Length: 119
Ligand SMILES: [Mg+2]
Image 1 (cartoon, rainbow, N blue to C red):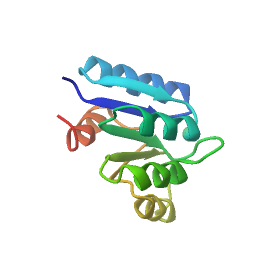
Image 2: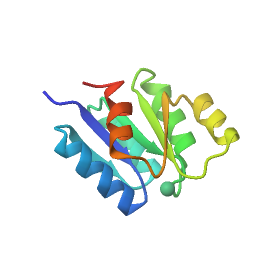
Image 3: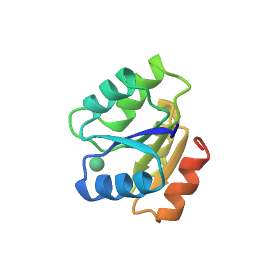
């Protein structure tokens, strides 16, 4: 059975790209556009990995990560963001993110990072 990956991303281009790449790779992909929907999906659905944009409407990726980790501490969460500063990375780590991927990323980097956590 393929690993289930939840992509939480408000940018349509990044969301579409990641979904396409991961689906093609054989993963079972679901998407969420807002932080609150991402939290709902991550907690309600069987999910093996979350790709979490940090800058999201309503509820940002840091807070969404904290809420998911409060219930599912072992669910791997990869933070994704463009133009991040060290303080953002520190906050992501403090929120419980397991890895970080800078946008725009190469497809190979996305795959490498994802396969660190799921087969
Ligand atoms: Mg965003």
